[in-house]
Length: 143
Image (cartoon, rainbow, N blue to C red; front, side, top):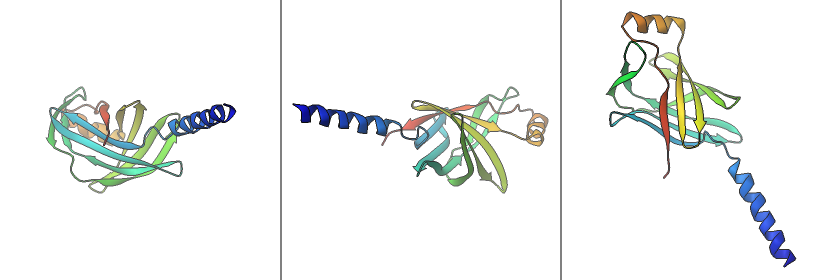
């Protein structure tokens, strides 16, 4: 009987240890209007997050609300400058030769991606009649 209780305690500790895995790791997709706006593939490598991202072409209205996915996400590029601080994963992805910064917040099987625009990018968006993009929602994909 004592060995059964001991084995059960070990199994519980192993399960608890596994549940503390990296909450950002996994495959994530962001869909609007039936089209794939973005995809994220994130891995936990020795406690650090690495991965890649694919971002489609989209348009936002003057309030920054997504109103159309022009071109779906198809081409992945690596993410870099990855920093995890206070439950927020910030990273950079190259986009046509310029670095784009993002912040990702995860809650269970959903995540919110925020666009970290420079003042210059915000002014360019305003000149085109768009506001800074509001955060978009991703869902974890289980395979």
